[in-house]
Length: 336
Image (cartoon, rainbow, N blue to C red; front, side, top):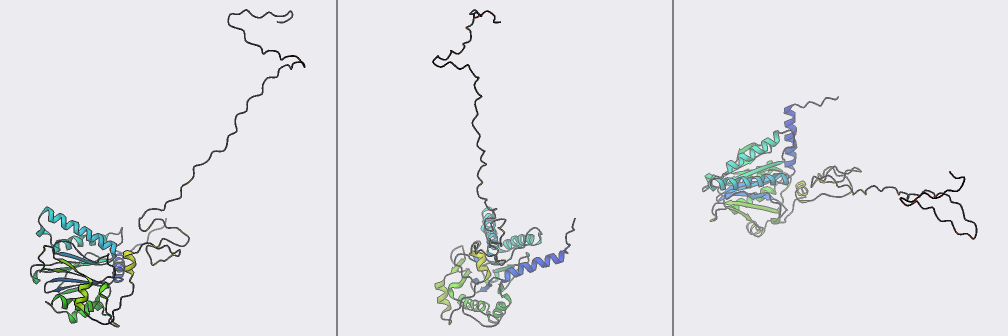
């Protein structure tokens, strides 16, 4: 019997952390920045249906990077938790800090569990207050660590480069328009050259404390973004990122094995053990029931031979059994 390889806990945690960080770095960056009237979220997201920034509750918003299916499950769980707490107690009891603590416990448990892979996600949880000093912005990493951010924060993609550009151009207490221009320029900044991100590829949302409705979350559509950003030169869309394929595309049937595609259903000449989308085993073709061999009809036994009649004479009548109670037939002399 072979013995399993021993892996120290430190090496195991390091491998899991490297795995999660690589998955998060493949995505595009998300910026959360405070401005005069609330908190602004800016991200480059060509998809118009799969959002990285969403509303959780009246004054709470959620933003994430990484694998879409994983942070979408976390978002739905946060919405349910906030709704249940607000219904059972009071809407004022639903806070960003309480939601961040719940997310931290979930991510920490998943990361330290050896039975499943860690989540490849990082999360922003923001809550807008009545004044700028009451605003809260929390950043949660893949291993459940929580950081209280102030001013601005960046996660995913080339976060260090984007954060460096924000550190040079961010102005506290600026208006929404000025903050948006700085954030969009930071997303397009790179170590080699800067590019102009098309307004249609931007996902922008804000928690605006000046709204009269109880729900402070608002999205900025393409027309409003074009009006605010104005003429910026030649727009250049980003190259397709791995998260684009992971987020919305279905499994490919290319006929060739692609190890980089987790939804690839072809693996050389070996069929997959289960469907990667439904997680169901492949359905085998119906098997015809066994057919029994044909059975020959039964053959009647041969009849007893009888004395043939002479030519021209009728056949002798067949002997009949005697009737009950009748005397026996006479016998001829010499018969026994």
